[in-house]
Length: 280
Ligand SMILES: C[S@@+](CC[C@H](N)C(=O)[O-])C[C@H]1O[C@@H](n2cnc3c(N)ncnc32)[C@H](O)[C@@H]1O
Image (cartoon, rainbow, N blue to C red; front, top):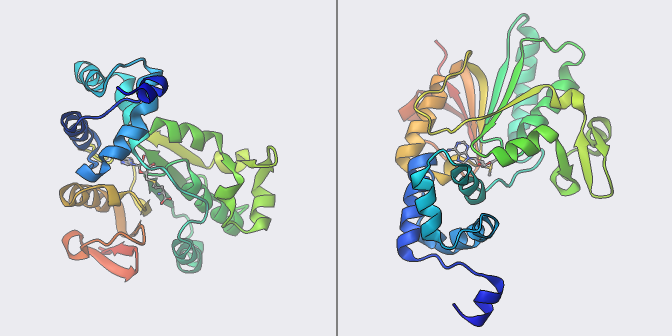
């Protein structure tokens, strides 16, 4: 260690430790970390080692392997996943929902509508949906309608439940919506009103789980900017499980940079990043 490194306590990640850690992440959450990500892994995990008083990446790895239920594994995953998101991101999906699906839902009385944001991060995506539903259906939102947000990371789910956001996350929202649905906390942050927060259920869920144990099927699954982290085998696994829990005729929304081979999964291409499951 150089003098500078010992002063700032920089932990170096060897090629061998990178390989062990990237295998661990791949096996646990399915995320593939190619060799180019070594520097990123090294820098993102510095704080974890310091905080836990762990002396090396090897020690970190050994401690997780000895006790796979330790919070260290979840902390490591939290730090390696990219959680960036914001309200009204990739607005074409919201336009489609409002312009094409909302009018259909309005004419289908007595129907339960279920929407899942899979890989919801800190909640901006599913809360944008909740706000739009409130805008277009209030005061007649049936009790059976359900909005679900899931993520692998407990840290982002806690933020989602709190509903507190820095102003830059709200930049794409119409100012009138900000005024109606948020309370300013200070000059730089806002909190979403309890009436919108209570519309959404947040749960921890790993998309690599063998089973997807949901009670009912979904009308729309938003799985945007999540598949990008997985290799083809894991992508296949996740998409086929998502399609299984869609209602016939239900929609899968993916990120605009994510393409999927629709023939493999009984999906029809509707428009970029929007796919529909075949109706019965
Ligand atoms: C970039 S965010 C996407 C947020 C939002 N969907 C959007 O498009 O703005 C990706 C999220 O996927 C989550 N994620 C990554 N691997 C996962 C897994 N195996 N199971 C569940 N969530 C996962 C990450 O924790 C992260 O919060």
